[in-house]
Image 1 (spheres, one colour):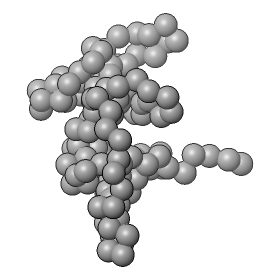
Image 2 (image 1 turned 120 degrees about the vertical axis):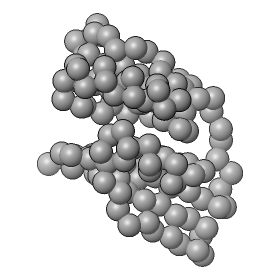
Image 3 (image 1 turned 135 degrees about the horizontal axis):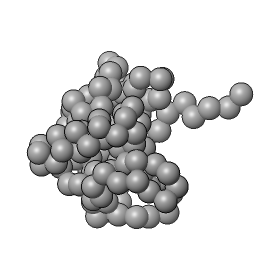
Length: 130
């Protein structure tokens, strides 16, 4: 049986990104990992249900920048289910009040989802789904 074990994101600030997912989505942060020889550090975030997100920083790689919310080939968003439409509405308001961009207000999409789209502190698209 195959399953996605985790998704990884590069960041310039692990603490800032970790705090966003912990504060708004209840992620549980694992112990930080550091490899000084490769100027690499990471932290795993675990969500209810077992999904994990690895946030990583490199002091050696020059990572390509994309505009916040950019649509590009490859991974384009992460969808996080929060249980119900009322929670989508409330969480979208909380994230907006904290100063994070909301690209799409809560709505029902053509494929039947009730969702909003926000940006995390690094400009990654996050779908908040019921």
